[in-house]
Each structure stands twice: as structure tokens, then as C-alpha cells.
Amino acid sequence: MSAISRNKGFTLLEVLIAVVLLGILTAALYGSYFTVLRARERSAEGMEARRELGNTLDLLRREIGSALYKSTDKKLKFVVEDRDSFGRPASNLELTTLAPPSTLSTAQKESGTIDVQYRMVEQENQRLLLTRKEQDVLLDTTTTVPAYPQMERISSFLVECSSDGGTTWVKSWDTTLNGKLPKLVRITVQVEEEGALVAFTVYTAPRVGGT
Image 1 (tube, rainbow, N blue to C red):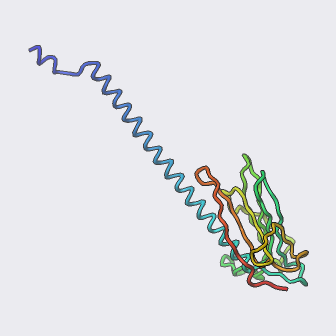
Image 2: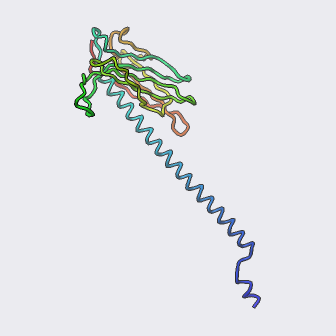
Image 3: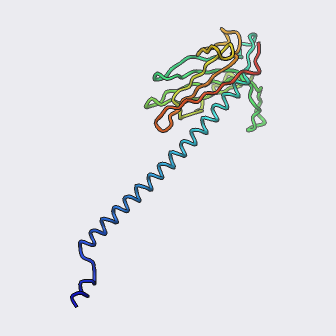
């Protein structure tokens, strides 16, 4: 009878051990779940940042490739200003380029020629934002057009120009002074990935041109 009585239930020590083991298992599963969740969030942010970067570089390549300039038309320009923010390159870029027809509204008149401005804006905690503003050159230029965020996750933005096809590079260009478009443009965008700065560079050349 005594042996049967001892097997009827658990001792307090056994219950405590089971509770402790259950707590350890729950904490491990809880930590693993949130670790996986944070990894998925970082992966999604990284994919979004790469998509944003790819779209920005592709847009710049197309706009510079379609840049317009004529020495007799003061509305047409290509200007690169050498700037820095918190010790990092933050070029200003303004150019006149061809624009594809808009599909948003057929009622609005368009000339197909726009002035585009890229600027780096300083934010809190030394964060930078690349903004873009475009305005039709030949139509209404009296209306103030706001600048919109083009790329948020950016550490530096550098635009360099070459007049000899890539042998010599300069960080400033002005068609008012140079009298022509650069033969080649190099754009370097630096972003932060997993705590490290990574640079992406593309080359493009104005193909429409002008005199």
C-alpha cells in the first residue's frame, strides 16, 4: 500500500523542476520567434532599399542620357554643384531633360521638356534624404513645385563629370561656364547595409546633347 501511495502524484520538487523547464523552453521559443521576425523585417527593409536604389539610379541614368542644352537657350542647363553634408558628398544636380508623356492626365498640356533638380536634405540624427523636383520648362514656370523624397535610405550622393570620356573627373559643372554638356557622368550613391557603408556607381552619357 505504501508503494502505491507514493506513485499517486508528483512531489513539489518535481513540479518546480517541470515549471522551470517549461519556462526555459518558452523563453527559448519566444526569443527564437522574435529573432526570426526581426530578420524578416531587416530582409524586407533591405529589399525595399535595393528597389529604391535601383529605381533612383535608373531614373538618373535615363534623365542624364536625355539631357538637353543649347547655348542660345538660357532655359536649358546642366549644373552640378559640389556640396557635402556631415563630411559626406551631397551633390546638387539640376538639368533640363526630355520627359516621357504622362499617362495620369490627358487634359494637362505638356511640352515634353522638364527641369529636374536633385538635392540632399539634412534630417535629424545626421540622416540624409535625396529629394527630386521637376517642372515643365516651356509651360507655366510661375507655380512653385514642391520637392518630393526620392530616396530615404542614403548616406552620400556624388555626381562627377568628365569632358574627355572618363580620364579626368570634376565635381562641379555649369553649362553657362563650360558651354557644353559633359561627355560622361559618374554617379555614386552610398548606402548603409548591416552597419557597413556600401557604394554603388553608374556611368551615363548625354546622348541627345545640343550646342
